[in-house]
Length: 284
Image 1 (cartoon, rainbow, N blue to C red):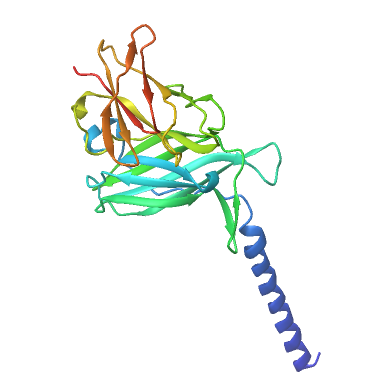
Image 2 (tube, rainbow, N blue to C red; image 1 turned 135 degrees about the vertical axis):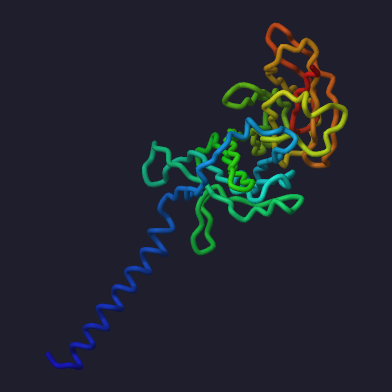
């Protein structure tokens, strides 16, 4: 074979390989279901349940853009040297109808020295500027890796995903620890009910040591209700006089609610006018 022809064939073969690799990464690799990468952790891991509640971060998850994204916000982080997280959930597998696949995102860009961390997370995939939101999401899990020196404090908390509001209806988290009886809001909004890990900042009117865990929040861009909604929170305490406080996530205001305690069912029920975080307080 002539030397010039041999060189031409080699160049053509290399070019073909490059094109095939580019096609794989642009069209196949990016569109295939992705799992969040595992975060490397030290051997010394302690459950966040053993932490002082006042030192735990306060976390919110607010759905936006028609439920296609969730904004994660983390406050009260100064206790730690580093914080990382994994937000995971099950969604419909677009390549296998009727099956679910784990999706999610990791965050390693949290700076605990900041007063607040805020980031929008796409619940889906994106390729060449085209977004494909996931479908069939109902719930997920948020894992926080909080590092202090050589020790990691780990928190794993659930979150539930709803679309509601166009009609009167009830929503509740999967553990049935908090439930809402919603009025009609005229249209549907996306709502996340989640364990907030810690207590909202600026606690007023009570001692944080008297807070009964878990603290649950309902997060949405929905406006205040035209008619009151009813929220019911299960109370895991033997106290005969628990109290219920709400924290408005939009204007950062606290309110002690006029809540009715059912000692037989161990529930607190109150009327509210917006989605908020709810804190059960049982003085010892």
